Length: 87
Image (cartoon, rainbow, N blue to C red; front, side, top):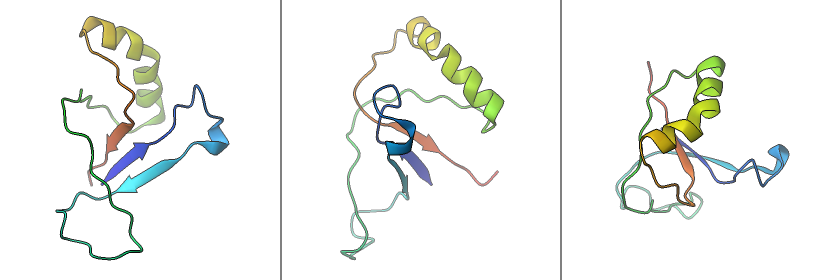
């Protein structure tokens, strides 16, 4: 399961931020007009594995600028994608 933040909280008030919950399927899996589907843009993405705790997430976002700089990453205007696993 994926969570995709659609808005930048630095530009959009928290109560107006949109967030999608997604499942990865093949393009023929759902043929239902009530379920929105879209393709994610291809390309390279940076992947950060962190614990899903309030402390770990806060620490990560406090250090994100340094992490981006230290790893010479390029920031694009794409949504942040979070992946959740059962464990």
